Length: 75
Image 1 (tube, rainbow, N blue to C red):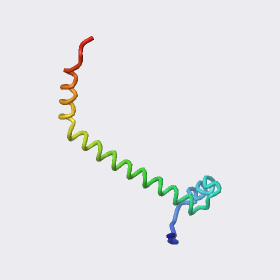
Image 2 (cartoon, helix red, strand yellow):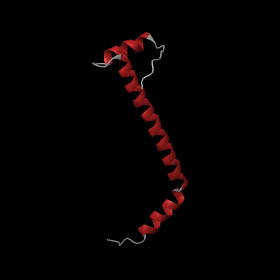
Image 3 (cartoon, rainbow, N blue to C red):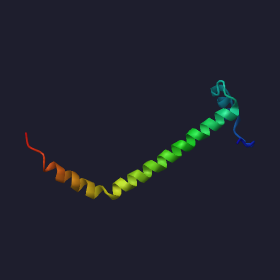
Image 4 (cartoon, helix red, strand yellow):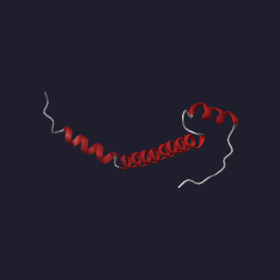
């Protein structure tokens, strides 16, 4: 469901939207841009959580990797 709203943006940004919108109207263009921006925020948050998990387990993972390397046959 679409809800009509009003926003205030700078004139230069509006000109850029009109130039870049192509065959989309302003509303479609702005909605697509906001969806992409929000998706990027969500990805960044997930990446930050993943890095936090990896960092919390870094010592264990490094120990595990070192142990595995002891099983390799020297060439």
